[in-house]
Image 1: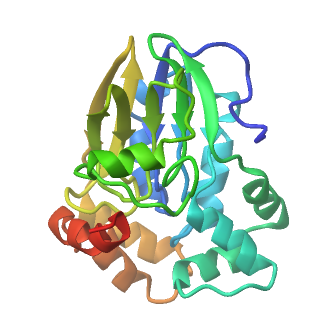
Image 2: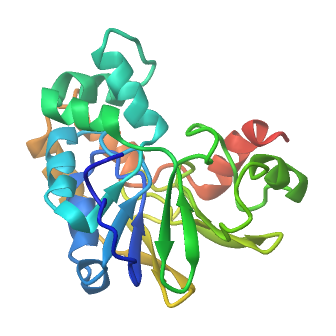
Length: 257
């Protein structure tokens, strides 16, 4: 269990973030949102550091102390594996593995997946990255119901809300009376540029969006990051080169289509 977000008090309000991917300026913009600052708990459902500013991003998240719950994503697991001698085809994961301090790598290695927390107005809520059974599993807004049933086969009936990430596209939908929430991505949005997140309060979910000065964010990352060819990276991911339509097409085969 992560030492972060380990308190026993039942939260009333949760700010739900995911896929920060080491893009510190956008994370900082989201964290300054009044409703995020006022939230009882900030939950980040994985892929925290695999990007251009991994050290600073993780330090910013852990500085939230007991207000934050960090959940492991597939890229977080991959960064740890690379740091221990493994390989990755993704340059941003290899960069994060080289850049993070030993204490940060230890933290990533200790992150839980999945996590169940009780939330006022929701009851037990399951937080995961891809799905509760696989941090790299792809489920989408239009995943068919029979596949959802397979994915959720081992989720306890008492869990009526599942919060995930991984696919970088925000959605809220019902799946046979179970609510599924994906807040989208803070650092690598597919579709609308900026920081996507969600607010869970009083049994209600609302998708939120934080506007950014895209040029300023990109210039800051280029100036402050040592990531190789940081400009090409931010042009692709921060500027939102990949639309949601393209992403859905690419992810489709992994969703059994």
